Length: 80
Image: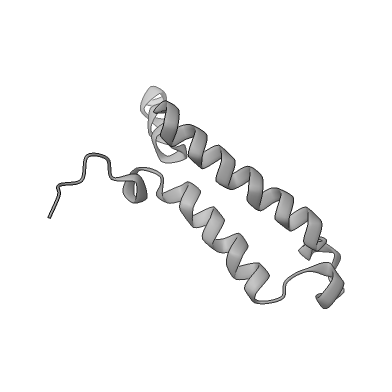
């Protein structure tokens, strides 16, 4: 079996969790057209958000950008 070169799921866990949460909301029918709860948002809005999340994650991976977790670590290390 090949050795991992980059642990994408570990490095970008925050970003992946956001995508999983959005998919879970859609799976649970948490969209305004079904739930009539305005905070759930329209289906088109949720799809647009999901597309942006996925595109953002792909961009970070392709260009070696920091994950949200790494950005937080950097910010908090400067506060010490």
